[in-house]
Length: 151
Image (cartoon, helix red, strand yellow):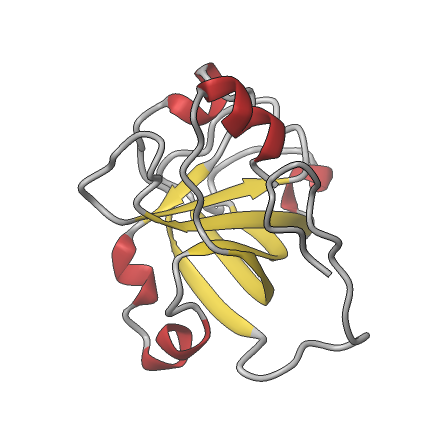
């Protein structure tokens, strides 16, 4: 059950398997974003091109802006030398929308993989499987509140 007063984080619970329209599959080449994830929020994100949502099957599942959850994998180019652990599938949370706190004018797809990669991976391909929706985008009064309640 989610609380609307902002004082509590929503409880994430549900069935043991994804419910339609999930799972949704996205993929794209990681591109540079605004640089806020790591620098301002201490939460590095990998930006996927908005075109990654163009597949009609993806659009049906992620048509709402907000925060989603699932799994992601960096699909390193064959000539890229990385540890085996960097090639694994990891849990992720993903924001799709305009980031109201920052007043973006461009919709973005930002994936935060729950793994500490030693280096950036701009230009690498990423595969994402979205398993569910957590909540809509929210406007926060301060950067501190955004960091505190962003998930």
